[in-house]
Length: 118
Image (tube, rainbow, N blue to C red):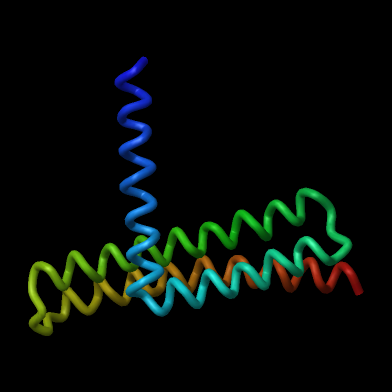
C-alpha cells in the first residue's frame, strides 16, 4: 500500500510539472485556461441544471487535456527533428485538429444550452 501512495505522489508531481510547463511556454494552453474560466463562470451564473453545468465544466477540462496532448505531440516531433517533413506536419496538424474537435464539442453544448434557455 505504501508503494501505491509513493507512485501516486510521483504521478501528481509529474502531472503538475507538465501543467506548469504548458502554462509557462504554451500560449494556446493559457488561452484555453482563460476561456475555460470564463465558460465556468457563465456555467455557474446561468440558471442551468446540475448535469448541464457538469457537462460544460467537463468539456472544458477535456479541451485542456486535448491541448496538453497536442503540446506533447509537437514537442516529441520537434525533439526528433526540427527539419520540415510532411509527416511531422501531419502529426502536428492532427494534434491541432484534436483540440479543435474537442472545442467544437464544447461550443455545440453551449449553443444547445443557450437556445434552450431562450
